[in-house]
Length: 256
Ligand SMILES: NC(=O)c1ccc[n+]([C@@H]2O[C@H](COP(=O)([O-])OP(=O)(O)OC[C@H]3O[C@@H](n4cnc5c(N)ncnc54)[C@H](O)[C@@H]3O)[C@@H](O)[C@H]2O)c1
Image (cartoon, rainbow, N blue to C red; front, side, top):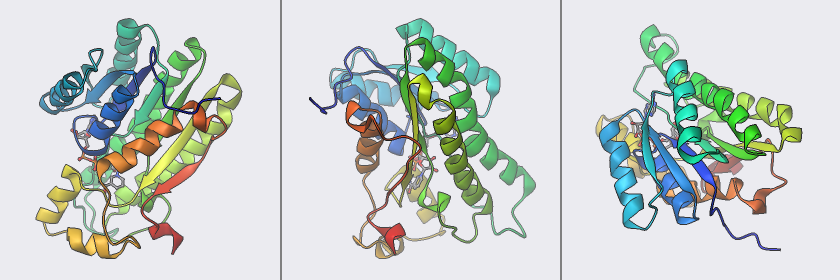
């Protein structure tokens, strides 16, 4: 029995694939042979990811514009992916935002609403439309990106922490609901990872990358590919009995 990643003939959809973890995930799915639907709200970034994938032989990759918080756009996205490729096997619901918000007592309502809409409602809407498409394809696997703060709180980002805790609950719920339909649903909880999100917040003075690294037992933050490899593995045959798992990928932070 082989557990190697062999996704030839399979179709993967990755949201937030224009940068960071999503871009690394889209590239990793393509490297394993999948046709990849590169989904992002930012067309320039999404097309850049497609170019990177095509440069390494992933000719089936295509960009699909979508704001994951908009139900009509998500429904249209999944329809377009199924029309383009004829099936949907894997989804990595990864798009997320983490603007500076202040604490629980002063987080502006508009920021709260947008963070919940993208990070939590966006993951739910993704699954809402991906699951029927996967059932039509005979089954599939979904990975949702939560966070270390989906399991343990961190001050001064109430909406972000709440959204990521919500992704954990949503992942477990869908895992129970569709286990007999041949769909596995898991979540990854990355620790600090060197992406545009973290670089922007570090530049804004929210934290330092050295400070994030010092909190990790491995004394460094992650490369996006170290997170992407786990997402892709969760979709593989090697993970065939992994369902409803909430998996920290954080160098050991949550062990302490
Ligand atoms: N970087 C980290 O340290 C870290 C840690 C834990 C969890 N995460 C989570 O991992 C995911 C990816 O984070 P990242 O660091 O790669 O972020 P990033 O900001 O570097 O990239 C996110 C991508 O998502 C896209 N996006 C934003 N809003 C969108 C929307 N409404 N619809 C579609 N696309 C949208 C952006 O255009 C961008 O290309 C997020 O859910 C984030 O919360 C990141």
